[in-house]
Length: 69
Image 1 (cartoon, one colour):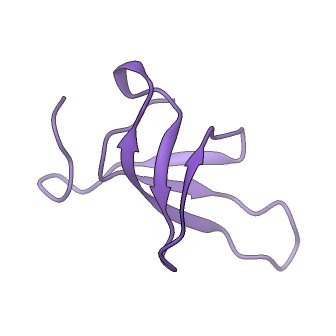
Image 2: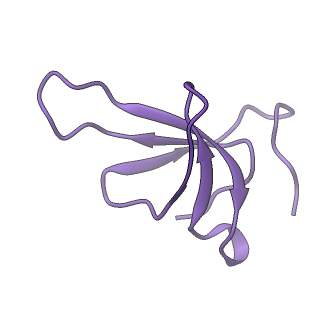
């Protein structure tokens, strides 16, 4: 899994009726885009995440929030 700052981490719910969670990646701490990622959820909560198999990276739209490394 690889990400850059500005991408979104989409965590799929594994509980019926529960919503998926989407967080903004604000820092990439691994080498070459690898985890862990510091993320911010819409409610302002920030946490360090090591994504599991229920997560996908959604690339930021071109020209919006992505930083080249």
